[in-house]
Image 1 (tube, rainbow over the protein chains, first blue to last red):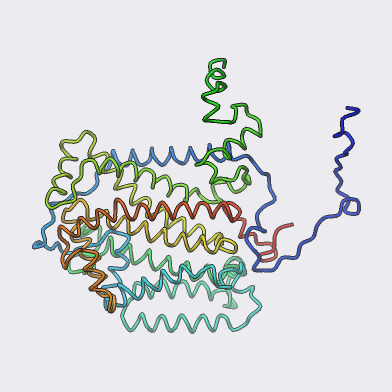
Image 2 (image 1 turned 90 degrees about the vertical axis):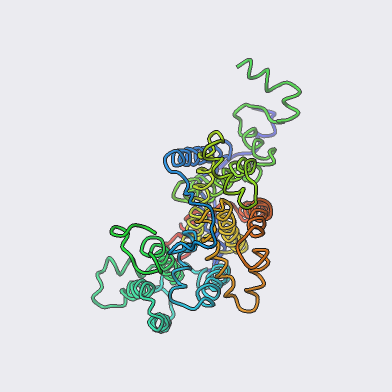
Length: 237
Length: 250
C-alpha cells in the first residue's frame, strides 16, 4: 500500500552466503545444553502443549481408575508387635537396601551405601566426566580402560570378600561390555555402538542394573529367614 | 456461537479472563501469560520437545500422580483417625461402610507406587538425555531431593493403615536408621516419639505424611518447575546430538 510506512521495508530471503552472511559460533565441548536445542519450529503452548498435557492427565487417571477397580490394596490383620511375620519386608522400593543388609553390616548397608548413592546423584552435574557427551573410546586420553579396570577390580574384590554374588555378576557383565570394543576380535557393529557410550552412562547403567537386580531379588526371591526361594515354586513372600 | 460470545464477551467474564476466545496467536500467548497456573509454561515451545521420545512426559506424569494423591489423600483424611487401634478400624470402615471406600484407598495406594516409579524413571530419562548439564545443574539437585521426598512420603504413608504389613515394614526401616553412627538412636527416637513403633510413631508419621512432607514437596515442585522454565524449557534428547561429539548439528 503506498503511503504506509511498513511498505518502506523489504523482506529478503536469500541462500547466497555472500549476500546474507551467516553467523558462526564456536562452542566448547562443555557448552550449555541450551545451545544444543534445536532451532526447530516454535509453537504456542496453548493449545499444542496444553492439549498433550490434558491427554497425559486423562490417560493417567483412567489407567489408575481401571487398576483400582481390578486390584485391591493389601490389608492384613491389625498390627501386632508380638507376632513377627517371617520374613518382615519393607516396601518394595527399600527391598534393595534390605537385600544389602543381608550381606553387609547395618552401618554399611543402611547408612554408608545409601548415603554414597544420594551424594553420588547430587554431584553428577558438577563433574566434567558427566558433562562431556564423548564416547569412552572417543576420548583423547589413553589408559582410561586400565584405570576403569583397576576400579572394577577393587569393587569386585570388595564384593567377593562379602560374597555379594548378586552384585558381582552385573558388575562383571557391565565391565565386559565396556571393555568389549578394546578386544581385537569384537564385531564391528558392536564396536561402533559400544565405543560411543560415554563413561558416565556406563556407570549409571551399572548403578541401575545393581539397584534393579537387588530389588527384584528382595521382592521375589527371598522367603522366611531371608533364605533364597523360587517364586514359581514357593510363592512370593 | 452467539451464546458463547454472550458469555465470554460481557464485562464480568472479561474481568476474570482478560483475553478473548478468538484463535489468534496473540490470544494463545495471553492464555498462558495471564494465568497464574499456566504461566509456569513459556508461551511458546519447540515442536520437538513435545514429542513423546523427548521427555516421555514422565515429569508431567509424576505431577499428575501427585495431584491425584493430594485429592484422594484429602478424602481419605475425612475418614481417618491417627490413633491405635482406631486407624485400623478406619481401614475396615473404608472397606465395608464408606461408599467407594475401597476404590478410594486403591487409587491412593496404586498412585503412590506409580509416583515412586515415575519419579525414578524421570531421573533416568534426564540422566541419559544429559539434561542436567549447565545451566540445569541446580535443578537436577532439586530433582534428587524431590525423589527423596517422594520416597519419604510413600514410606510415612505406609504405616498409616496400622496393619501387620505397615507395622513390620516400618519396623524394618526404622531399625536401619539405628545403624547410623552417633545420631542413629537419637534420630530414631525422635522419628518414632519413643523406642518402639507405637501410637506416637503413628501420630508423627501422620503429621509428616499429611502436612510437613506435602508442603515441602509442593515448595520443591514449585522451584523445580520454575527452574525448568528459567533454564530454557524442557531439555529433551537434543542434548545428545552426536555429530562431532557434542557439537551442534549443521
